[in-house]
Length: 88
Image (tube, rainbow, N blue to C red; front, side, top):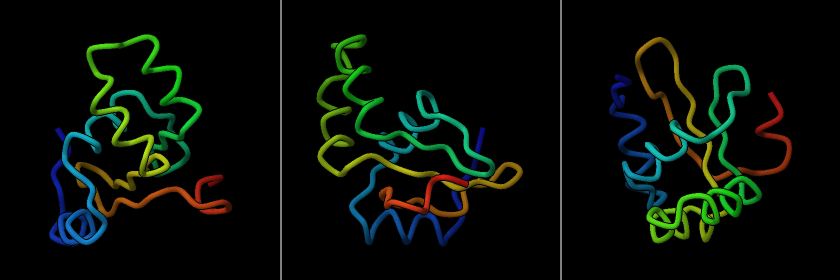
């Protein structure tokens, strides 16, 4: 189980990112080096596949997805994807 650093919790608070959003990203996102990325395209597919998660997934979709950066057992930071920042 990954633990949140103080920095990650502060960034989540500043950016309106919930632990549910982070968990969904870790569960369904794609790994890109030290990041897990869940973009809008993936979220659309997940909404169709998992209707029970629709409300949580829509929050992620509205925020344009999520990137979770981790190292060892720690989540270092989280942010909303921007071009050039998720390719690795």
